Length: 95
Image (cartoon, rainbow, N blue to C red):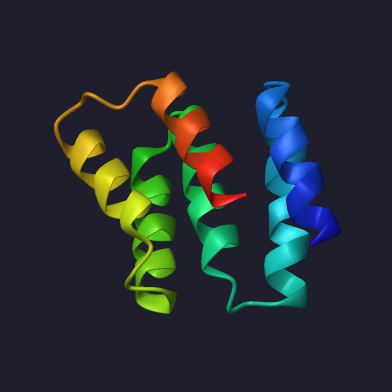
């Protein structure tokens, strides 16, 4: 959980590479955390890698089909209407 907390802090500080490193550490320690894949998807989205973002969001849904915020993010991403503010709000709710 420490790595997830750090990743969120780096995410809000716009230090996406550091956030990615921390979330990867969290996934290495526990590969079944849907929130970690959701966050990694958001980080990739912020880095402009929509393909990896979508892949990670889908993994999060496979691990936790009731992770409804991810459905919203995928839909918004598909419609090119996902904004940084929405990503931040969703990450805040999940925390």
